[in-house]
Image (cartoon, rainbow, N blue to C red; front, side, top):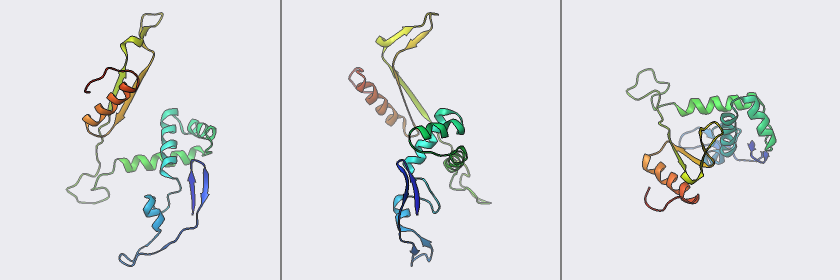
Length: 164
């Protein structure tokens, strides 16, 4: 089995076999690591490549940046990865069924919080407000969890003590 990781391609010798209970073929190490049957990327590398594509705005630029941090990947590979992850992110429990009472597509609410210090605020030459340092925290969890994370980030940067 060949697996692309952050440090390069790793070749592994793994066991494949038939599960006696389900009578299906599989690879126990893939199941243990949470990899799909033909997945070639480790989850950490998938996250980095998907983030790089998002941050750079194009698959070509993402491929160029990935090559700079030691993971050469072409733009077609990054495009296919992003498309696969995006499709999986919005599938609900009723996906692919002709008749179902369950949602076919799930909604995911993204929560975003920004913290800054008023002492670090300034103005541009044109008079527009400017923050010299800010922190952005986002997530899909509960609002309280986001608030706790944002408070922790603010505290690390010298924010006031107290409850969020």
